[in-house]
Amino acid sequence: MISLAEVGFAEATWILVLKSLVIFAVIFAIVPVLTVIERKVLGRFQQRYGPNRVGPVGLMQPLADALKLIGKEAFRPQNSVAGLWALGPILVVFSGITVLAILPWGNVQEIGNGPVGLYGIDVSIGVLYFFAFGAFAFYGLLLGGWASGSKYSFLGAMRSAAQLISYEVSMGLALLGAIMIAGSLSLTEVVEAQDDVWFVVPQILGFLTFMVAGFAEANRAPFDLPEADAELVAGYQTEYGGMRWGSFMLAEYIEMVVISGIAVTFFLGGWMGPGPGFLDPIWMLLKTLSLVFVFFWVRATLPRLRYDQLMSLGWKVLLPLATLNILVTAVLVVVF
Amino acid sequence: MSDRRDNGSQEFPYLADAVEVISVQRGPTPGGGGGAFRAFRETLRGLKTTMARVFEGPVTIQYPEEKTPVYPRFRGRHKLHRFEDTGLEKCVGCSLCAAACPADCIRVVAAENDPEDRVSAGERYAAVYEINMARCIFCGYCEVACPFDAITMGHEYELADYNRSDLIFTKEMLLADPLERTPLRREGE
Image (cartoon, rainbow over all chains, first blue to last red):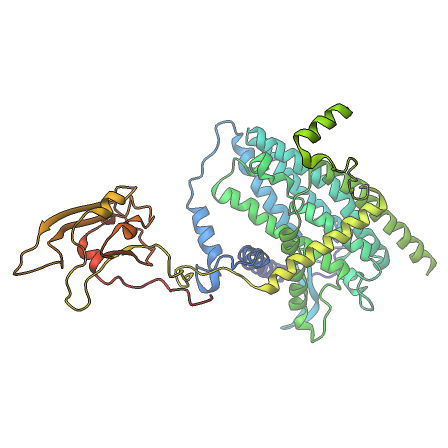
């Protein structure tokens, strides 16, 4: 078998399978809850309660939503390209889930009769993996939008593709500073390099750039142009319904968790926190969720940007800022 | 130009001493480092504003469980009244309410009172008294028109029903003490 990348620490295959199942289960338990939390948080920001009718304090709302979506008729527009149209949402969800594999939830721990790394897999090219599969979502959007055979879908898909590509650049450059200080592309080593001080302190510019680019990457407000309902109906998801549309939404929330997780890993000390080692995943989760809360907060605050503003922010503000950040970091890393 | 101005001041005397030059206040020019800084600062201000709303707490009234109290003069579902001492109906079937009703939703059929078994205090009584709540606009003219204060507007507003025919309220329904489901606003609330 050809090894595609160096692996920092590897266990038996059955442990890997078990770990991926656990990560999968946890994320898929969190994401539906996030949808209802988002609606409740948005409600609080607007001085109302949000959903509170289904189940205790409305927590069963995602169940009702999912049942409704699954129960819908799986229709397909006449103009659409059958196979590709169905492939769109699959690719988007796939690209979100794959990144979960490298998010480190903790260091290597002694569990049972041997050491187990509290992550899917620790590869030496973690950041590249993240960007490769993060950019993969763009194929899903473009394919879904184009294969729908509708001009609104197509325009929305073009927009999201342009947006994703523009912000991918700033996002990568924003992480570069942290990578230079850590001297590694492996996410666990990046976290371990933050033992003394979290990278958010020396890399505050990189952190802010990454978060702004992350909002755009996840197609979240204020950069939710692909689904600018006033002009594009719902962008690339216009012709989708039922659980196919639900998959796009699911991917959006997974993406949000992933970007927050990466931001925590690179800037907020990853799993680091007081307490014994088995608390590490809890710390990681708490930090990630508090960044997800920032996503909600920003959504409740900022209006949607115009398309040219989006582009000029990406290319004229974020990119120079990220480049400046790298430049200064590089000089400092060499000098000290 | 000056002629037109003079005509204007004759026609509109208040324009005579209007200021001719109005200074427009403009914001700083967008873009550049200053623009980016201002955008960032204003974003933070916005985030602060929304977070302050969270701490103020929701203002929602959870309707079916909580209800907004109504004012004493609130015009809800009608009530027909009886004399408290004798128990006779106040309505004498004069149909003035029906005549006053702009929505034409009141139907009154009057009948002569039997002296042995009186229904109302007057000569006649309302044998049929129906209000079609689907048509009623709750203007309260019936209440104003009634010479005996036999009909008044109550506080009830939860009148939705599944059938139009169920919205026609008969005399018995209007006479019965309605379940008071609506909280009354206290003094000064």
